[in-house]
Structures are given as C-alpha cells and as structure tokens.
Image (cartoon, rainbow, N blue to C red; front, side, top):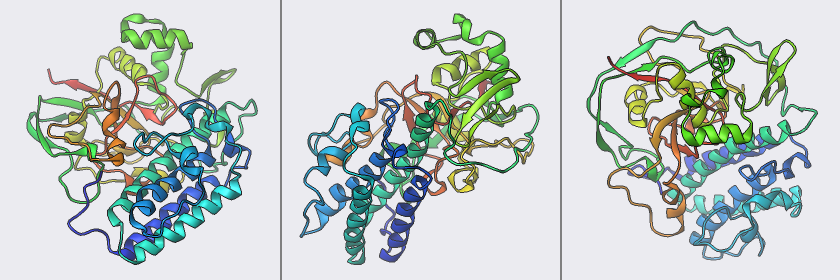
Length: 420
C-alpha cells in the first residue's frame, strides 16, 4: 500500500507523528457542535462524526486486528457502521445514509478514538506495525481534508450561511497577468522513486515521452473565470465536452459552486462565511468539465499529469496549505520570472489525464489493495494539494482523483498549451 523507506520510522518518531496527526483531526472538529457533526448534506459527503470514527476504525481493523495477539473489537457493531468501501472486510452501512447515524453519540465516538489510540501506541512502543500505521496516518490526513470540505458543503446548505470559523486576516492583492513557462520535451521519468512514503498508485517510477509545452506560471483567478461567466461561457455548448454540457444544463450550473450573485456583484461562501468574491484569488470548486470549458475559451488546455509533474516536481513543498490556517485559496504574493507558482496548496489542479495505473502497477494483496486500485476507472487526476491539505501529506508524485462532475473539493485550474 505504501513504499516505506529502507527502515521504518523509529518507534518514538512514529509515536509523536501518530499523536500529532490524531490531535489535528480533533482540533479541526472542535469548532463544530454535536448537531453540526451528524449532518450529511449529500451522498458524496460524510458527517464529521463519521470521519472521526472511520479513521479510528482503520487503525483498529488494519493495525490492531492484525498485530495485537489480544485483539478484541472496541464495539461489535462499529466495523459495520464505519467501514467505508472495503468489501474484503465485510458488510457496511450504506454510504448515502451515514447522516442517519445519530448513535453512537459524539462522546462514544471520542471514547472509541481514545481506546484505539491507547492500544496502537502500546504496539508502537513494542516496535510493531510501523508501515501500516504510517499508511493509516496518511489516510487520516486525507480525511482531515474531507472533514473540512464536507462541513463546508453542509454549512452552505443552511440558509443562515454560518461560518465554520471566522477569519480576520486582510485579503492580499495578487500579482498581475499570468505568464507562460516553456518546458522542454523529451523522455522524462515520473512517479515515486521508492524513497519515503507514497501511496501505491504513485508508482512505479517510469519513463514518459513529453512534447515541448508551456504551462501557466500561476492558477486561474476569480477575475479571469468571471470573464468567462460574463461572456456566456455556461451558455455556449461549443466550449463544453458533451457530458459536461449535459451536467451543466441538468444541474443549472451558472458559476462555480458557492458563487452567488448579489446587488453589488458576486459573493462566495467560504469556511469563514459569505463574503465578496476576491478577484485575485484562485478560482475554486469547479468540475473538470468547467475547467476544460474555460481552458478552451481561453485558447489553451489543461495539462496532462505527466506535464504537471515534469514542470513542477522541483518546486519546494510550500504554499497555502492546511498549516497556514487560512482554509481558503490565496492570491500570488511572491512572483519570480520564469518560475511556476502556486504549485502546492490553494486548489487541487485538474489535469486532462484519466486516473489509470502506471505501467507495472500492481495493487497490494488483500483488503488494503482496495485502497486505490479498484477506483482506476471513470475518474481524472488532480495534482498539487489544496488550502486544506496537510503539508506533510503532499509531494510531487501525489495523484488525487475525482469524477469529472465533482465540485465540492477545492479544485481549480492551471492552463497549458502546445508550443507553436
């Protein structure tokens, strides 16, 4: 499931990381009421309480049950309630009805977390299960991001438009027009090289041929996407993929998710509540269909995932990530000629690449092999992380993936084009 380094993390370092990651999840849930935590606003999203329990179930099922000789389940029914999609593990509660789980209570779920934590830490003190625990921590970091995107959707459905948490910092002014960075073609290597943690879908390292191309040095902004909206972009079928056009018409799309027109212009729902649309922030909450239509309108295209990795792999992992505590994309503030900016954080960047296995990919045997491999159909790859992605969770080879119509994640656009 992962590519551990030649030696697994030493027990004390992994113990510290375990307690730290688990604490972040609970800190992200802290601003919410118990009522907030049980709401499921759509089938794609899950209640906060379910995220707290499911991440705990993962450690109980794949660490404790397999490594603790004295294992007994914390509760006989939690395996059914909090399994997500692991068919090899057993039956599970219907995904679209997770919001019906008013019981167990929040207090009981938190007790579940504490009980499993004590037993996992005891195993780590004995030097057991290190690589699977590391996988579980990256799994939990994925759910930290989902916790925030899911509660944002839930709060947006409330007519009061309540804030998850107020945000007081001033909105910075962004840099000017985008510029193109030329990237040489040829034979390149992409994929994880085997050093450090990676999900199995990031490898193996392999060669790809890339034609010379240009990539935008920053993300597409709200100002730029608004020009597409005002030019009738959502009413021009010639710009859209066929399935995208049907989705836009059937669902009444007229702008990105969370944009709302007002008397003084457009407004946007954020985790800090409703506020005026900031023109220099990266556009977010767009589907692949919207990203592709915008790119065609702009006389460009979306990059392939190979192009993205070749252009961005040497950039340092820094940016508007979860640790900045902004919880919303930010404009470009520092800019250097000829460099690709906003590589990590802000928004997940749609690519035109279908989510498929790399040459030589083999899913791990057993239930953990269901983590990634079985989803390699009908989805597209996104790169770079978002403003709610933990810094230690993202890397140049990370392959996120969603269906083309999904908008509730922090998804945005970087343009590419062929060299003339």
